[in-house]
Amino acid sequence: MLGGMTPVELARQECANYNQGACLGVSPDSLAARDDQPMNAHPLPECVLYLGQPCAYFERCVLPMANRGKPELIQAREIYHRTHSMAAALRTAKCPTCGAPRAPRKRFCVPCARQHRQNTTRESMRKRRLACEQLSPKSGL
Image 1 (cartoon, rainbow, N blue to C red):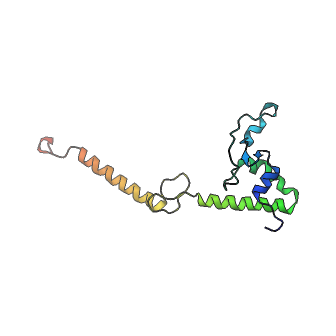
Image 2 (image 1 turned 180 degrees about the vertical axis):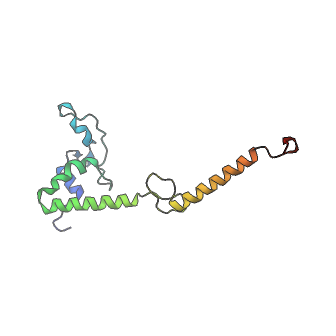
Image 3 (image 1 turned 180 degrees about the horizontal axis):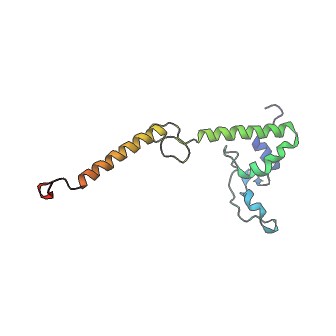
């Protein structure tokens, strides 16, 4: 990358959580604690940006300064957003029956959900019919 900066390089230079390749694990939400002491921190042995994962602290505290007008900072921000959106696209949920993408918070895709619902209803009705008393000579009908 000619004259550019990667998100990892930007984190190495500007991230307060970055400590010689490791992450101090301070959450951006815990920064509002009293006396400027973070309320909770979960140190990690390696920066999550090295692993290609999104980092909430990096997004909320480091990336906003990429608007300072320096082209390498803007390029690092664009690279991060591009890779983050590609990672999100790879994490899309798949239907366990057919492997097609499914909507968030749904177990099956639309066609498989319909088929599963029909099968479940049929099975339920079959069990119900077997459990109810059949008309017999004693029933009076």
